[in-house]
Length: 312
Image (tube, rainbow, N blue to C red; front, side):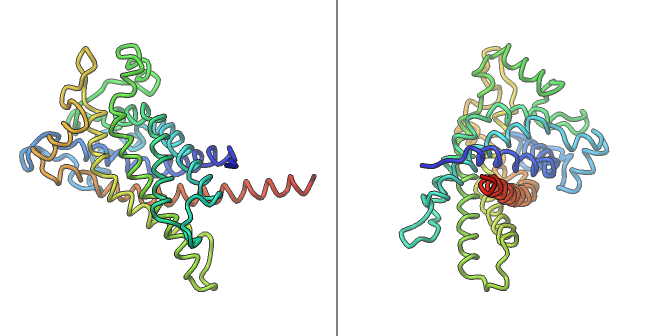
C-alpha cells in the first residue's frame, strides 16, 4: 500500500493548529467533568454552573492565562493521536480502502480505518492525555474540583510520575483512552468521509466548493464525535485525574468498569454526560478545524510536489 509519510506530519500539525484555538473549552470541559465527582445530584457546590459561567469563574479566580492550562501536553497529545489516525485514514482513503463496491464511501469502512488510526495514536499519546488532565484541573482552592495534583509544568509532571511509578504510571488509564479514541475517531472520520462524499455527489455544481464541503463535513463529524465520545471521555478524565497510593493504584477507581459503575450508581446516567456542552462546543470547531487544516495542508503539499515534478 503506497504511503506518504507527510500525511502523518500534516495530520499532527493540523491538530496542533486547532488545539491553540479550542484548548480553553477543553479546560472548561475537564473542570465540569470533575465537578461533583462521586456525589449525588444536588449534594455538592457547583463552582461551574454553565460554560459561560465557567469561563468567567476561571478567569476571575485563576487568571485569564488559566484558560490555556495544559496547553503543552494538549498539543503533544493532539499531535501524537492525529498524526497517526489521520495518516492511517488518509492512506486508506487514497488507496480506495474506504470505498464500498459501488465506489461510494462506505460508512463502516471509514469508521474502521478512523477507529484503527485512533486506537494506535491514542496508545502512543496516552501519557500526554493524563498530564493534560492533571494540569487543567489545577485551580484556586475556592473553585477546585477533583483531585489536585501539584505539578508545576509538563516536565516536572513527567519526571515525578516516572520516578515514582515508572512507565506503567505514565500509561495509567490507557485502557479507557483506546475505546474512547476508537469511538470518537471512528465516528468523526466516518461522519466526515460519508458527508463529504454525499455532498460531492448531490450538491449542484454551482454550490460545490471544496472548502464549503470540508467545513460542513467537519461540523457533521464533530456532532457524531461528541455524542459517541462523551461517556468514555468522562471516565478517562476521572481515571487519569484520580490520586494514587504508594503502589500506584487509584484511590477512587479500580479500573474502567469500576469507574463506570460508580458514576452511574452515585451520579446517575447524567454523570456520564457531565461537561457535554463544552465538549460539544470544543469538538465541533476542533473537528472542523483539524480536518479543514488537514485538507488545506495536503493541497499545499500537493502544489509543492507538482512544482518539484515540473522542475524535473
